[in-house]
Length: 147
Image (tube, rainbow, N blue to C red):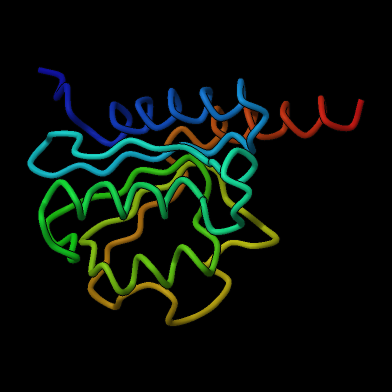
């Protein structure tokens, strides 16, 4: 029997958020936060719309999830994000004490995984879930920007 709520299922939800960002002219990164197999927060990049360099999908998701839970810690939660978090987002995720981070495409230039100690030591990191699909969306966005 196929488990309907697995990493791929939730990453597909994050991809839907990334597509919203793409349509808005934002770098297409989407994120969802899950608690007990329920999506409690959805977001995508809003840096252009809000004119705010900190308005990354992950930052928006952390804030929305904390609001939903009524507290600042995201224990027993998982973040699904289409692109590896940057160092800023990794630091915020550290402080949120989130249990698990699942990302799709690797960010070779700005990914937090390049720096030891960015993520909380108890946070489980899973990479590459629908990585090719996530990466193609970002690649397509930048190819269109260059035209």
